[in-house]
Length: 114
Length: 113
Image (tube, one colour):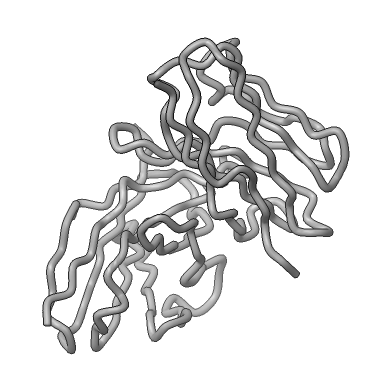
């Protein structure tokens, strides 16, 4: 089935450690790709997006993501996590065959321990 | 710009009552989306509009749900009658163009008792 998969429901990292959140999609054509962050009780904020071109994209708050076509992946990374990064992270795609719909993964909850 | 504005932020109502959620998109954005977020089902697209016209309402769960966009700066999502299983956070988002990033409002947390 066509979908967006975030295999990790929860991740806990120590403050200052590096972070990688995984995202895979299963659509025929390369979709537009996004990462959003949601803090408790808040709406979703865009971290970064990929439409085409350079496969390593930089976002806000020191995040970056790499698109790998061969793996149908768009993993989110941060070299050094801060306590304020604790939130839920959503990978989302706009599949080319489905028009303008944004399809979300199930989300990954990030906990940061001091 | 103030971003996407939603009201109310919280709504508590009793089963059977009518509920109306409101959204003001970012000025100039041609697309407006309504989402529902629950623990069980995550984020679901309910309906979206382009230039005030509903384009895809396949995500609307049943006839109790309806959405309108009478003009470019206002949209409503109505549930009548409401049921406890409608309890969720409802988000409105807007986008400048097709496939572009969507800007989300703060959400309305609905509790149906």
